[in-house]
Length: 183
Image 1 (cartoon, helix red, strand yellow):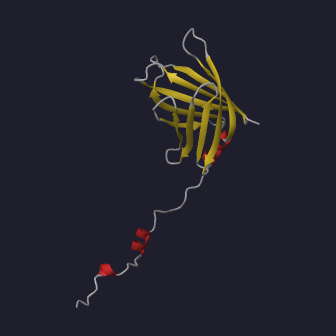
Image 2: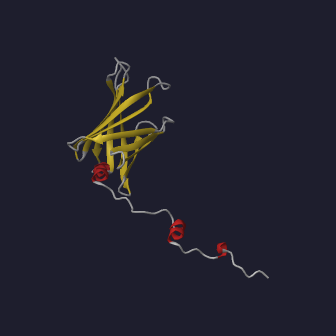
Image 3: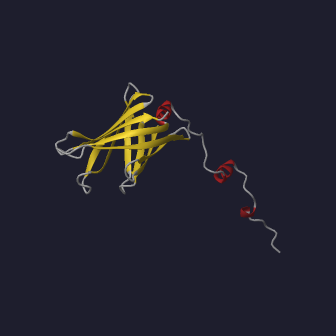
């Protein structure tokens, strides 16, 4: 009969072993004032969309709605839909404390592309400018840069403008949306 005991048969009690057995943990991140800035988007919104269809063509006008909420104090999650045709979208926005930039993503029911954003808020605290790149609406196989600006005219009215960088290096507006908070 073997009366020796292997060290692997005994429970370990060293501090390093105990830490290894615990789930990954550390100090929990806390939302910053940059995260709190996103709270101004929270709520139910009605929207009016104007999209130029090209030189000499009429502007497409349509309406929709948006519902936005905060997730854990860090992330804005916004879901929107068009009232005139079947279109749904989802926007996420947060603040990356390492990059010192606002970051986000966009998905919708008309494309298979995941848009990723980075940007900043101007010193007035009213204008968020996000930049991204993705498929050109005129040539989906060609990628181009986009600049998307949200300006809060008041707590209950904001204007979103999306512009695309053309081949000459000029920003061309391709979409304007007025958001009005539902009462």
